[in-house]
Length: 124
Image (cartoon, rainbow, N blue to C red; front, side, top):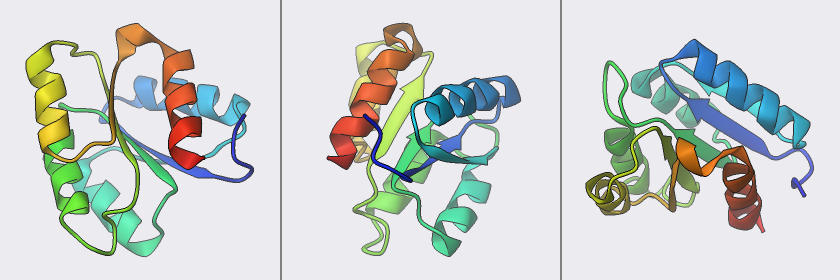
């Protein structure tokens, strides 16, 4: 079950995807903040770090991998769990996520339940 009041930041340039994740995560007991770009996410995280970060891979300004690598390379943000949640599911994408320092890689094909379960696991 959700850690009460835990904040999950959803970073995706697709507003429909953000809305879907917001709905699923809110129903699962999380507070959700959103960012529509990597740069916006980095600014928001500097101001108020979330408990978990859900990152899409392909975004306009910078990839989810770049955002993840920046966060993991900064001592102030390196402990924030990062989940790459993407439509891509090949092994090279999974390898890129791990190389960037992501704590988990979940394909959208694996489903919302898997995403929610992984968030709970990373927060426990």
